[in-house]
Amino acid sequence: MQALIFDVDGTLADTETAHRQAFNAAFAEAGLDWFWDEALYTRLLEVAGGKERLLHYWRVADLDEANGACVKEVIDAIHAIKTRHYAAHVSESGLPLRPGVARLIAEAQAAALPVAIATTTTPANLDALLRPPFGSGWRSRFAAICDASTTQAKKPAPDVYLDVLHRLGLQGADCIAFEDSANGLRAARAAGVPTVVTPTAYTAQDDFSGALAVLPHLGEPHAPDAPDAPINSPVPDQQKGWVDLATLRQWHRHASTERV
Image (cartoon, rainbow, N blue to C red; front, side):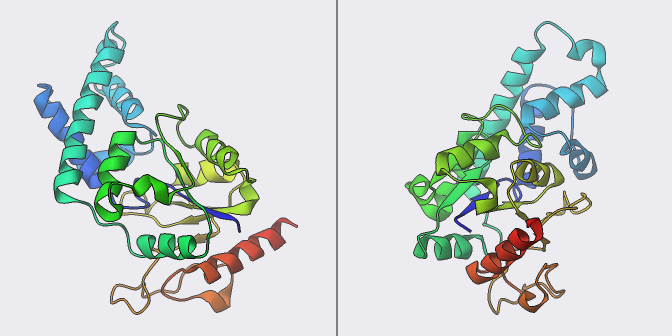
């Protein structure tokens, strides 16, 4: 195990409610009568990418209008408004990282183990989310960052993982990825990266077949919110309420053995 690769939305932080609210704020500002409630947004998350999600919904709501000549310009404008609302909300209010994320990143850095980001969210969204917990120099904490400005193909395409692996100079089997959704899991696995999944309420019903492990979150030692149920771990004697580097190394060795 030579590197850790993190997805962002839903994985580093539970961001989807903030994204949904930002979409609704953008619709209102643009004078649209659209509104995405939780149930609808959960279904829309099956479509990767904010602009792609907008186009998909538009085609369902009004196919003829969605095929108009100016549809791309309109979607770009709505998405820009949405990004502004999201960045402002997260910058002002902050979103806590999910349990265990900051601890595990700190453990990796103390062990000189590279940590990377593989996401297709925008750089503005990344900065808004990671500046509060890590400071203005947050980018220096990561050995590679690939996002919507560097990779156009959305998950479940493996492109963003392949880009990260190229920057790290590693093969997929050398790393462990962290995802929260089936699309993310498919992208990581297509790049050959063993993957730990920590679902959110929006993705809990996804199919995570092939994941290295599926658990509520990465956990904190002796924390009151540690998972009650044992982690779905491939190594029974490592079932505990949190994930550390020792756990990940054992899982990685197990995955390597399984491949052989």
